[in-house]
Length: 293
Image (tube, rainbow, N blue to C red; front, side, top):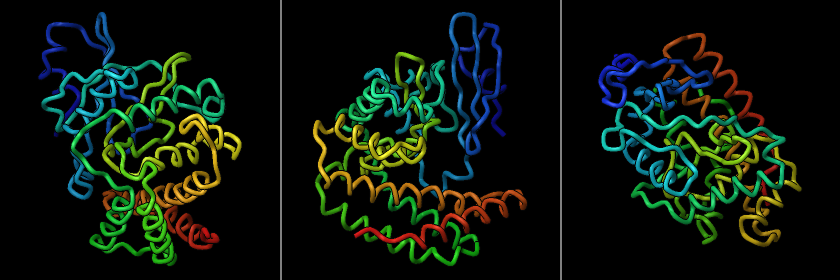
């Protein structure tokens, strides 16, 4: 089993120097550590190998995307770019997770909207990541693992496919390089700069999901969301607002099916049951919502 001690022993950047290791909280899927050295602080993330076979994640391509984002000034530097299969070493960014108050601040909003636009316009890594396919993978994994799906799953996934079809007929941000996991814990702010971390799901996909998922996670008001769109596009109109509304539904489904997927692969029976109970509540609530026009 790969441990942080083995990584420290193996990697040359940690050789012959005193290091202080601290596990960081909040990482259910992966283990993340803060490594303090004499003149530098690193972040080491050990990848969760259990989810990789199901989702087809490519951590080397993820590292390539992070390094390109680093050159744009919106992500940390990568130190094991060529062999980032089991773990990832980057600089540690001493910021805090984006809060609702921070996210609604016009000045801070300009910074993270600019960062997302830089991602969409500049990063080039040969990887496709469809959020729609991801949701289907989550459900398919549950079926393979013989998990009992919530009663509303079929209705919810039909709505997902309906939105996918609508979005596929739009040329606006439908296939751009995206982060695809803009959970507010993945967007850090230090009072000056924004840093985006955790690029596992990055790839060419629906760029509107980056906005929608962030808006859901931090609870942006309608007014905040309209400003976010105006800052990104330079204008605001009802058509792009409707696109955002549709993708916020996809974001909600992502949250619900995440619990289904992790219930399916969880080894602890109590955790498995808790995840599935949460999934049933969320999915059935989504199924009861009025569908978009």
